[in-house]
Length: 197
Image (cartoon, rainbow, N blue to C red; front, side, top):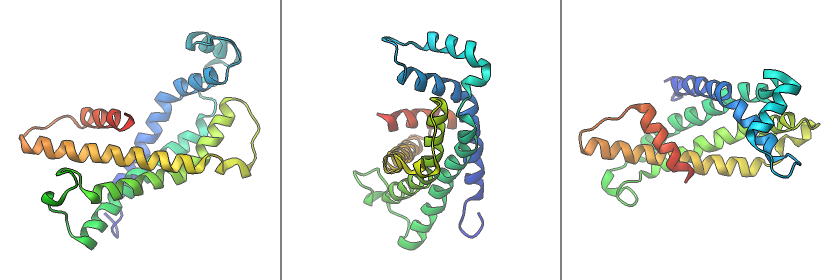
């Protein structure tokens, strides 16, 4: 940590973001093309065949360059802001006693730091997301368009990331209570799924 900023969290978030784009972009492109298709009942397989025949493998990554860069930056901001804000809240207001947690298990500092992480991600993601979608559907755009949908993106990210870290914190409490551990990948996967519910 340098001057209260969790550099490790920013780096880990950047690595996670880049990997997500490399693995997920082909499906993201197919989803977007299927959504904007004008055929009566588009399906993913037909869309994939058509995309491959017209653009090859590169077509599946169309619009991915902004997110490859932005994906790393947005997840870096998400985890970095969270890990940087949480200790500030604990220092300024004191660590919360679990007896004072909301509903007996929700740490308000985790909630606030989660919102900060979501806002950090949204500030970065909004412009990159708009450019990605425009490139996927091969639509022109101008710089003034980068703020379209910005408020929705920030709110969605704040709500989802805050939910994710709340589930992570509550699960950590419960596992500690029963002296159990789970794989970080399994734990994060389960908590992420619940955040989307």
